[in-house]
Image (cartoon, rainbow, N blue to C red):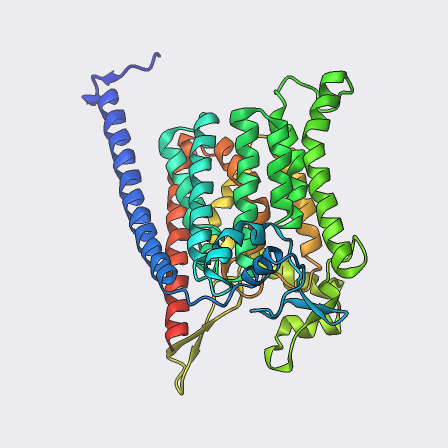
Length: 428
């Protein structure tokens, strides 16, 4: 029997029923978007409040920028605990690109420059604008693209590293995300491997692990009908184009290390100098177990995949909001929409991207710090967030959009709760 849109037995017009269901579907999505958008507006207001009240004198990249302006590599002092003392000189151990970006501002305002959160905000906004273009180029439907951008903006570590951009660690994360996003844009819109190499090089000089995105970007650049491995002249030329700027960036970093510590592979982490007053659990770990140890594995696995949002309650009756867990919340608890990637298509860029993520994540499982101190999602996720965004773009189709919207709204709400608890803890 042939299915027909109108049933004489029931008197129901099936086409009309489908239209009503479609209308309810769209209204529910719009309603959720209003909720998520409202949360995003509140979070943006909180970001603006932090931005205008930034005190200055908190980000060691200001000191490094000032050193560069005066032809030095060492700094007079540090604003944080993660500095290295070697041969009587103090060094900011982190890669130098964010300091170079800050040099014009430090040249004008000095090391007391109080605009690092504003700088981080501009970089994050620029990255989101790039992703709007990238998603359009990937033929992502407009509503889905909006939801993905909401997810990235307030459902990932991006919000918290932006609002804490006055710290050296967080500015480095934002800088690396901007330039790795530019690398994806160069692949998708410009098809320029030279630009890809340049942007990956700058990302590497912000966060070293981002160099492992190169295989993913290369796979994204290839057409679906092209072989992954080929050794003809065209392919070799392409590899040279992407490799030369990256090799140049690595050479700069090795020369930078050699000039500071006498070895191109010595990043200075072994010389981190902290006073007794500034000692933390991270200090104890580094001194007692080293920077890398299998003893960290179980802890890091739990905090990356399992650990939920947690607030300690204080006071005599433990009814007052106290501090949050400074080791953060797991990716699956704080950004549950990533679970929908079980439906990701087995396309070559995503498979290779997953291998790149694995290569970045495994060393972090035996590293002494999981991103401490941080709130909500593990901030190291930002190193491979471009892979995650492309995977979402290729996975979230119309049939998956409703659960995706629900989970993104939950993630945005948890970010807002986290921000509120952090503010209360700071005020107290």
